[in-house]
Length: 449
Image 1: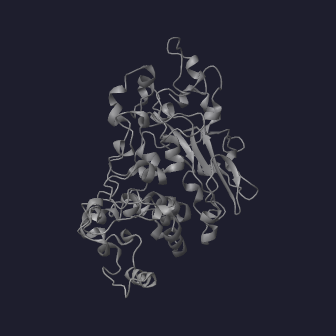
Image 2 (image 1 turned 135 degrees about the vertical axis):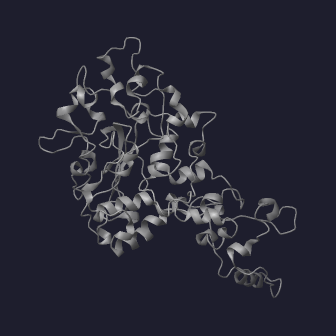
Image 3 (image 1 turned 180 degrees about the vertical axis):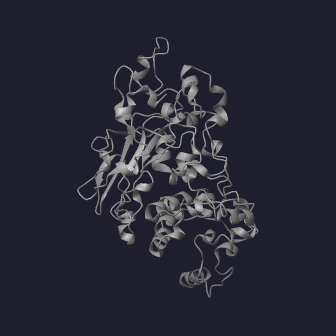
């Protein structure tokens, strides 16, 4: 075992014992959770006999008792464990929905062939954690290690738990690790610098998910919104007055807060393609990297698209789009998926083009001043506003900021990064036809206003 996998609890009844380490759990004792035998007497004081006794005491021990949370944690925390069983963190409802949609147009993995169900359980679900991997240790997927000896942490640690898992597309953005970016304004704030300062939703689930599972993480009850804190800012300046997303186009084009206040953010391709999954994955930072079994690519990007669910929360578009029906203009992030992703499951995605691969995104790299908001407010006029933001006005300046389709030959610009290597040939245009901006319309003011 590595050094970080050890912890010394001290002898019971000594000055530094388990009572000191965890006053809330010491009465339960080690064996109640971890199993094994509470007391084994060595036949002698010889080292060999002590080792035999130790091995006997540790027979059938559970390294992580919370794998069977109903039996261990549920003895005291029954409501939490019951709700957590059907939470987004445990069930990956959003992933289930998208995988099922692409395979056969259904809404959950149980409606898919058994091979897909088996692979989802053994592959996708293996990334997610147990109670102990949030409250006692780092998750196994990031090499584990106790957080503070064996002390239970009521609140998970942001660095060692939250962004240890949600790292590439959240932690890297939030901490400002992407070259040229600075940290999210909420991270540098004195009052709101921890994930849970904004994320006050019940991460264990609120008890509604079993009967009404969310189809997207954006459908989780209690998810934070910008307007919860910033509703009073809607009239702060001309730009807010013109673009505040309020499901009302008569006062200006409704734009997602993220379109104006996000910096470049991470998109990725490749790690779930060609049936490689874990075997072909290797952590990298930027650009194209070729490994033993395939490609993985992670790159800074910024792409604006149009929300087809605008003004229609009951539309038939994807859940993430419907949830944000107030926003006409949104940010999109590419997810690592191709039509070949589940080849090693023996599954074809006959409904692949039914849901976008450039998904609605809410980057965690918010800044008051960005490339979009840094305009000349003193000499503002209808023309110079377009220098940093608009694709029309004084010229087609910001074409690269948009997901654009010229529609004449059905080839989509700005999506070519997705085509990596000779074996990945997927046309993103069909899957994303609802969020793509048509170039022959964007120069017309009416497409925005």
